[in-house]
Image 1 (cartoon, rainbow, N blue to C red):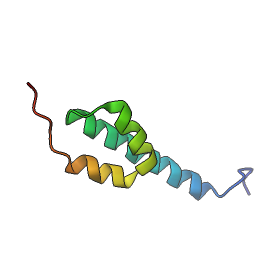
Image 2 (tube, helix red, strand yellow):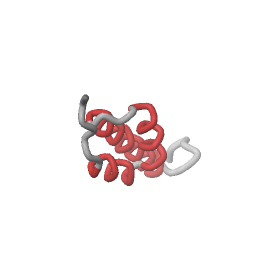
Image 3 (tube, one colour):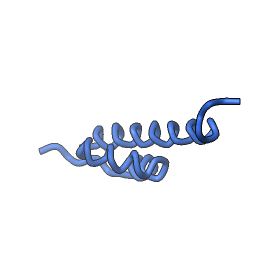
Length: 62
């Protein structure tokens, strides 16, 4: 038995969700997008944000 208020599996899934969101933010930043905005999107969207970040086109540098 654990002293956690909810199942430990839920904590694991939440951490993975946030990790994927952070990775999405880093990918989007490397493609020229705003890191802070994508960090928020990533933490909310998780896997969907990662898929969107991968699909982004790179912003050309001027």
